[in-house]
Amino acid sequence: MKDLISIIDVKKHVGETVKIGAWLADKSGKGKLQFLQLRDGTAFFQAVVFKPNMIEKFGEEAGTAKFDEIKHLSQETSVYVTGVVKEDARSKFGYELDVTDLEVIGHSHDYPITPKEHGVEFLLDNRHLWLRSKRQMAIMQIRNAIIYASYDFFDKNGFIKFDSPILSGNAAENTTELFETDYFGNPAFLSQSGQLYLEAGAMALGRVFDFGPVFRAEKSKTRRHLTEFWMMDAEYPFVTHDESLDIQEAYVKHMIQGVLNNAAYALETLERDISKLQKYVDTPFMRVSYDDAIDLLQAHENDEDTDYEHVEHGDDFGSPHETWLSNFYGVPTFVVNYPASFKAFYMRPVPGNPERVLCADLLAPEGYGEIIGGSERETDYEVLLQKIVDFGLDPKDYEWYLELRKFGSVPHAGFGLGLERMVTFVAGTEHIREAIPFPRMINRIHP
Ligand code: 4AD
Ligand code: MG
Image 1 (cartoon, helix red, strand yellow):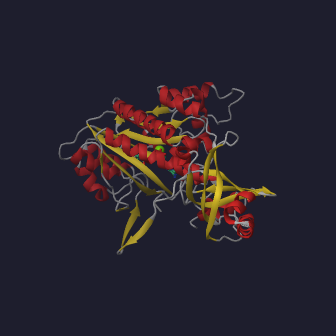
Image 2 (spheres, rainbow, N blue to C red; image 1 turned 30 degrees about the vertical axis):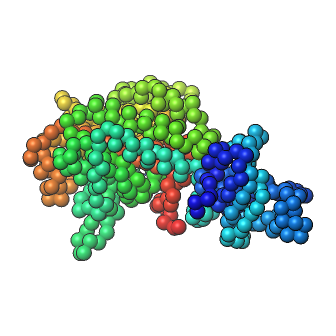
Image 3 (spheres, rainbow, N blue to C red; image 1 turned 90 degrees about the horizontal axis):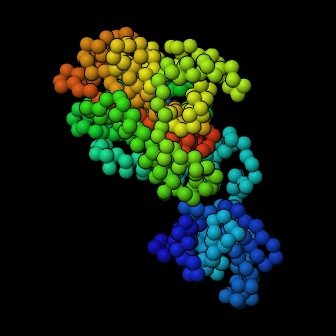
């Protein structure tokens, strides 16, 4: 309604009478005072109801009845509240509302998520309601600020949004984590990444990006894995691997700065250490080769504070290795040139070293793990065909992709960022399940 204002905007209306549409998150009070914790999706703040004010406005009988009605409102009742905005130095939010009138819109009874502590399975079963809590609101606001900053970055840097399909006839990443579905009698797969299609887009339009849901039948139950998550892929022609890292670094910094600029209330709500985020914007990211990282991990494996297993050149990292590495550097860190053996078929080998590929994972600091995977792509038709065969894939499924190497093949590179990994990192939350409205995990598809 056009006469309503948002809670986040009350600071612009100090001393004025305003009307707010909200839900009652919590309530306390004694005697002639009631303290209502209101929320409207933009912020939470306190409204104070003083019985003598009600009586003054509505008369003894009606004023008392109004005050009693307010006193008995239950959690999540929806209300229109009218009142005067006051500065309030004692509250963290800085403002409160001196209520002059309150109108109930919708009643609420026995709301299951009471202000006490609840177990996470219970909260996940009630995700449709859990989203209303302060923390969840803040995380969703950060998610939104990241999406907004992401579009802003791509727009400012000459990228075109190119929507890759969700249903696909071939695997983009690997065949072990594919969701298969019946497509009119033939198998089809839910997209794991839009990358292969974006490569076609890059040859048609130059710099392109996509942003959409992707699916991986992850059997692992970790705090970093979802089976449905959102990925931003970007792809660009005439760009080498090093230049690609520059683009990724600028992109991640732009998103962090965007959250600092546009989601300050959410960061404060989550008590995120803002000085750390600002440091990641202001400090160059680290770049270390996979082999140097292995040497470093070996050199420190007997240190007192390390708890990762021994790794050899050629081994993949586990999350303890990633955590240790990123903490060692204290800033987002690109690990470059991993072994070809556990990376995807489309990555270009390091010139002169076919056992390593021109790729990078960006590891977020503070233990948040990999947020980006990217690489320079193989451009040679014959080499790529051989790789497809070596990886046990059927070249027929990749005919169209191989053709991109037949008609004016050029050096090109790209990357994919996992939105929920980025949200978890920037919000400083522990588990990825809170970074998406309705998480999908191995044991959860409801609600
Ligand atoms: O490293 P990945 O597998 O790379 C690709 O899919 C490439 N095709 C991207 C490209 O070059 N265009 O996935 C990219 C990112 C990871 O770095 C991680 O952030 C996220 O996607 N990710 C997941 N996020 C949540 N749950 C999962 N199961 C994820 N798997 C990957
Ligand atoms: Mg990866």
